[in-house]
Image (cartoon, rainbow, N blue to C red; front, side, top):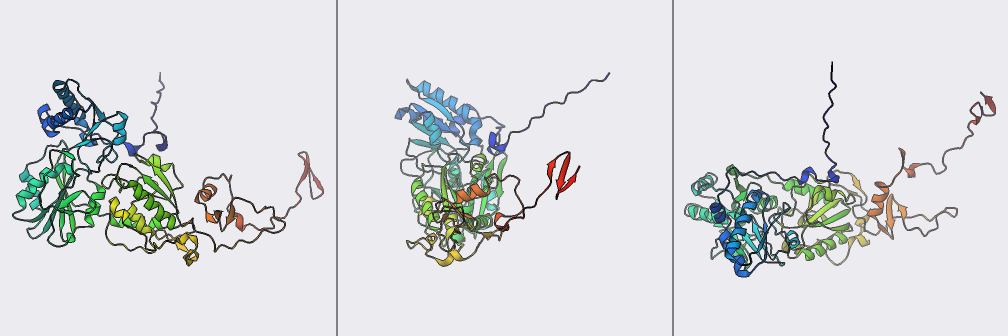
Length: 522
């Protein structure tokens, strides 16, 4: 007797746009050796934090952890809550902020406002961007047990010669280790130490080391260093960073110095690596932006200083170049969110220089560039300088090469008549500047017998949708991609003979007997 086996149901994942996608999954961090309460209090400066909270009378405290420190979050919150109850008659409430995986170096003001927090403690690496909503304390710790300084020093000595000029840089949470390394090797090597450039009154725990003669600012990042012995391009950068360094920081520094060497602190021990440069890939995106008709301005933060000024400047660049833009404010961009806007050809992101520029955007359906790259793309001719700027202040100082108060797309330049080609694919592009005035398009008047009334909102000119003299990218996109055409045909409407096909008499009659050319058939 045989029994029929019923197949087990197979789970089919939902489409990307219908729920949580694979792009939003965060790798699970497992802590092999759980820290004791005393070790955790020392690592995260809990006594100093509790004292600061009680002395200032804060009532609601929000704790923001990056993904790699989530395993310690519950234990830290419990210890802090216990200390507040023991030392205060009216202890403050403690909350752990969730969903801060995007740009974790920035303070998540939106999540903190959801719990009405009046004080935020930010753990881990930080970009030190100023926060105006509430006071913030930065705990410069990553919870990873560090190797001995002798091990770090030996790894440094294996990478450099005594004749090299070396610039020491680190993430914020490793500034104390960097300072120890500097004191260990400064007698044998020509090293320059960079320190954090925090605003006055910023609470850093533990306090970041500082040096008196650090008067020069490092472009693009909040760091200061002493005067250099020569040009910055003559130095080799040695960066202490985490297992996942900031791609924008590494790429930015690689354009300023001779070479970049990373010492990454991981749970499996320190690793020395040489990052791969991505300038060629970024240059390709710049050329793609030149042929893009519609630019999506992606604003992922409104708390950074100068965001609105940069937004207005970018909008002026795009309008002056004859392109069209849409502005989107998305707090936590991901692939499903941006995939909803198919009309956008290219995205330009306005965000944190360290964690919000989205350098690695291969998973997104449309390319993403920075304001600096957009400025290069909109120039009359691309002149690659080798730099790659990331801060807002540098973007505000940029201007277009033909910034003389006139607009190319208004018809003042005869270059509108020149054919335009996509420098990446080599194909002809007819709508790279849709907002230009189409004065060079000759439109023949309607024949007396035509059905047009002359008052249509949109007319078809040179295979483009034109509204009031300018190409409408929205109408063109609706007509070419989102309009239902049935099964369609292999021929364009414009190639069809105007006289049409000859009408011939076919068969007639009923099914039991047809007549063809006046001959009866059964």
